[in-house]
Structure formats: C-alpha cells, structure tokens
Amino acid sequence: MDISQKIYYRNLQKISGSFFVSLPKKWVENYKLHSKSPVSIEIRSDGLLLIS
Image (cartoon, rainbow, N blue to C red; front, side, top):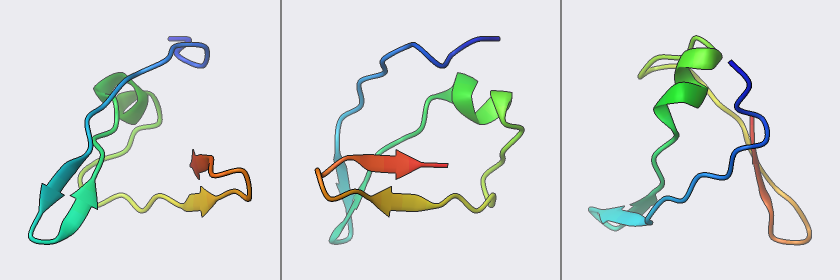
C-alpha cells in the first residue's frame, strides 16, 4: 500500500493539559505498529515535525 504521497489532516486534541495528534490508521498498519510502539518525533528548525 503506497501512502507516502497522501496528505492527512488531523485536529489537535487536549487531554489533561497535554496535546495529542492521532496517526492515520493506514500508516500505523503499514508499519506494523500498535498502541505501545515507540515512535520518534524530530522537531526541525523550520517547525516541521518528522515522525518515524
């Protein structure tokens, strides 16, 4: 499944003072992740978040 060129839009959510963004289900399934899988989030100098 090629999901590399698709743009997904998500709303920012706030729970108990923390902010969350949900990941697209197809992306999670494509990389065989689950609810406790670690992911890295890189904050780039241009403000871009890189999730891997």
